Length: 98
Image 1 (cartoon, rainbow, N blue to C red):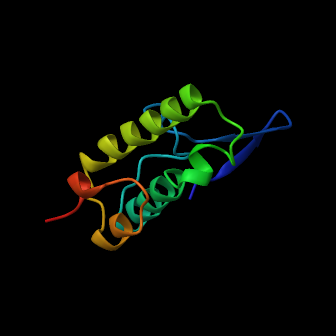
Image 2: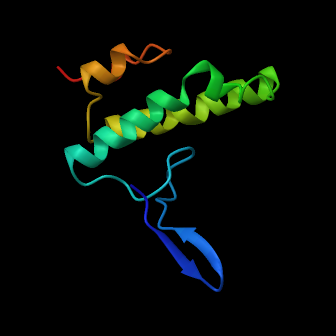
């Protein structure tokens, strides 16, 4: 979803400064929002949260909080699709559409 730009030999992303975990701009369409919800769901998978056991409990908790902050921000404009929430390791039911 995020488009990388090469500036002075370094790839940069047009990240929305409100994001803590998601890369790229804030979505404008439901398709883009779904991609963000899928990124959030994948990010909350235990093996991704702990980075295969390499993160401490404190770092894992911080990462989970940051991902859930992005979910809360995304929820202000786009609800989480039910099928995405069902397959997430963490309960996203409070972000699900109608």
